[in-house]
Length: 140
Image (cartoon, rainbow, N blue to C red; front, side, top):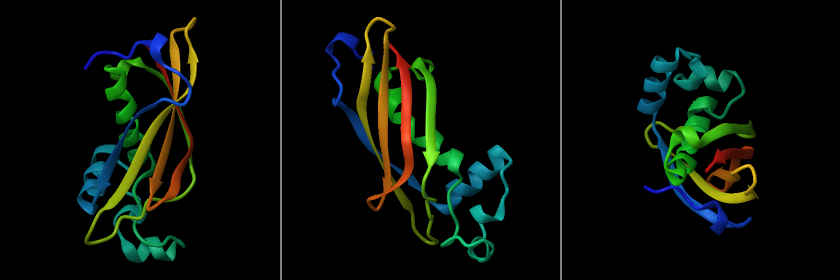
């Protein structure tokens, strides 16, 4: 994929959208890879005793998965120079079943002189925002 041309970009342009799917197996794989074995990510009884609706996806798994939209659009994951978000609502992962995380990327700012674009991500599950103020700075 080729890199976007910064001179053709405007605030409000939608760069794309995608759906990221999590099931319990994905949570187990991520727990093993990350070392985050907190039982709220695999044990319903424990998660509910902690005041959660059930097992939830790791916040960093969610954050790391949705930025792929921007990396693919930019044509290079190394083009991402800054990435920030706020965790606003946990992503509940049913068993059996999947959580469908919807991601839409929109150009929030263009700085042609610096060669950067800020992409704002809207990240939702069933219409509810799960990540807030999600901004990715990309150098093109």
